[in-house]
Image (cartoon, rainbow, N blue to C red; front, side, top):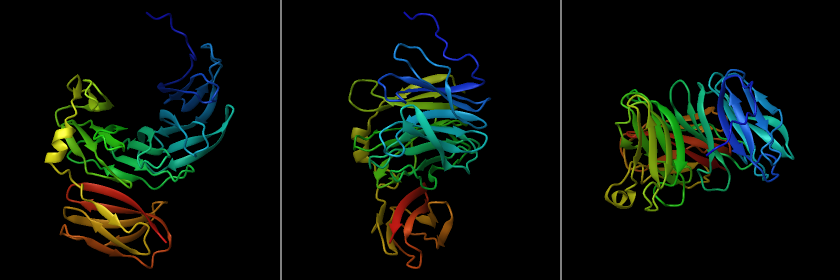
Amino acid sequence: GFGPMQVLAANVNGAFSVFTSDVDLDGDMDVLSAAEVSGLVTWYANDGLGGFGPGDTLAQFSGVLPVRTGDMDGDGDPDVISGSTTLGDIIWIENMGGGVFGATHLVDDALTGVEMADVFDLESDGDLDVLSVTGDYGELVWYQNDGSGSFSVPLYLALPNAGSAVSWAHADDLDDDGDLDVIAAGSFLPGSIAWYENLGGGLFSAGLVVTNNANGAWRVASGDMNGDNRIDIISASAFDDKVAWYPNQLSTSVNDETPPHQGLRLFPNPTTGHLTVIVPEAMTGFRISDLQGRVVRDLPMSSTPTPRELDFGDVAPGNYVLMITSENGYLSAPFVKY
């Protein structure tokens, strides 16, 4: 059994999110909280015996919901990540070491609210990227980390369609190929669970539907539920009052069916100003943006699934994102022009 409640703080107005991490790297687990009403992101240092101080305020901004930790700048200590459902900001707070925090950095400040934000190495390049779901419109986006804590423009995995906005997302290696795929819950009727296959190089497939019968799907998680060494999906759906899990059968079905965007290729990358884009379906739009989100070039559309040659030799050298619109959804592919 468990002992009586041990209260860390009794005045956390609108306490919404809590997370544990060894923030000061002293060998014990500290506690972080986010309070939606007061807007406070607070760290409670553990003395090693389960005793906690009054809490140190790390940030305050309206409508704060998520709080997580991860090494965003590659210096070996856990920084703090949070977001605001009212301001539309995602931030990370720099851990200077020894329980001291420094500057607050923006990941994005132009969203329509932030329902969730978490960190995963989505590119398998050794640094942590940010995965997020926006509040008002249920867009599923991720941000590429350059390794020093600077992030790309939002790279869209899913935009709301057919009334089924994304409400939550998670990442795990569903197809056992060594990289992290993205799992998402769609909250509006008809509720859906979908996954987005990581194709490597910062590219993801369109959403591959697991079910359309999770009405009011609100949360997703993952784990091996039946001991077969495959990662299964778990969901909670509010409108039909169900908690459910979905056995992973990808070891047989992947070979029988080619998912959308499986044949996507973007080369050469880096490039001097010429890209070949191959998608096994009709592409309907191309847009090049810089990492600040400014549109550099809108490119003509194509209605055939044949390779498309893109020329932009007059674009200045730098890091860019190619947004591709196809019949099955959206892809965002980072590339370098030199």
